[in-house]
Image 1 (cartoon, rainbow, N blue to C red):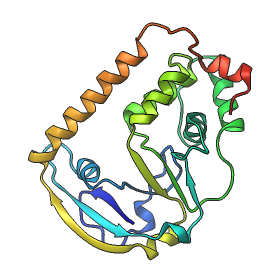
Image 2 (image 1 turned 30 degrees about the vertical axis):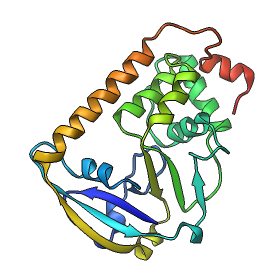
Image 3 (image 1 turned 135 degrees about the vertical axis):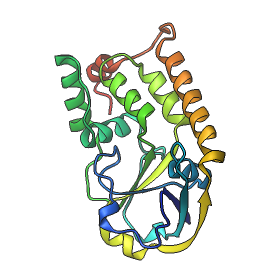
Image 4 (image 1 turned 180 degrees about the vertical axis):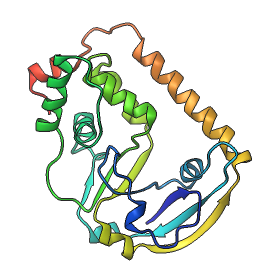
Length: 213
């Protein structure tokens, strides 16, 4: 399959100094299956960028796919909590974070992890869920609309990526779309966060009592 990486420069051969250290899927080199999303990642305000494409055969590697039916949103939050700093605002939230890491974060050695992109909005999603502000139902809904990322955790795989070309990305063209997309997602999340409580809604305290994993 073809995966894409957005950056300020063309990256024909990724190196270990390009690894992201504080990301929710683990320490690794992050890619997306969507070229248009990589284009958004490549640019910032008045700063053009490039999308680099790579061929990769996933069957050769040990892959953890958090988007598959085998896993639940709790597994994603558990992995996020294990890899990122979470602003737990109470003793209860600290207990929730520990519960998710100990009981929900997948264990094992994986070459590649596939899961929802851990951007600013989804950092809030995980943080609000752990702090008891976001229901489990709305956590599920948010992850259903999240963007998928591939995190290459084993650095030797970087040498095995087959460079498949690159393309220039204009900030003037793409950044306004990126900004609008983020604002739309943030507005949608705030509406879910502030929506009235529904009958049967569960929060992290109930998840822990039920022993959900």
